[in-house]
Image 1: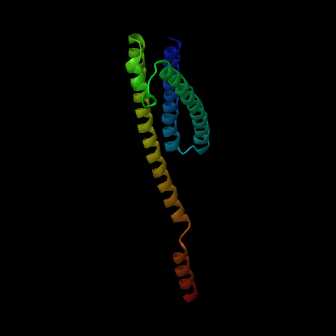
Image 2 (image 1 turned 90 degrees about the vertical axis):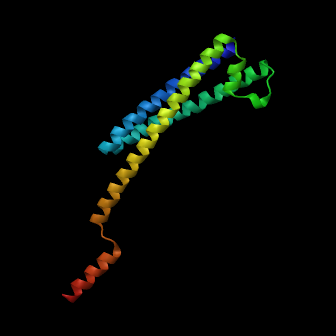
Length: 152
């Protein structure tokens, strides 16, 4: 039973982590729109820290799943959360299915938020590039101006 409880606990921690990343993503949207570069850097560092924790949780989950697969004498091909849920005691199967649903929904929301932020960054970059092009004419424009200045 301890393995099932550990797996459920890890999934719950992963959900909490992805929710924290989603919160950061939403805050990043506001920061990008407001053009607060330093604040964006802070949020990116916080996100990197969460990603590191996420990697550690995923490794933990892999070990627990591997132990459960071994305990259940399952084939290595069946080393998935879904296949474990199908063989879990009823109470744990339902709990794991609910947690999996929450985790997948959270990951989907995070993906949408990341796409929004990517688009916001692209738009901001276009504005910056446009402003630079106004402030710094290209070389051919400068050559034409120099030519006209010499003629005058």
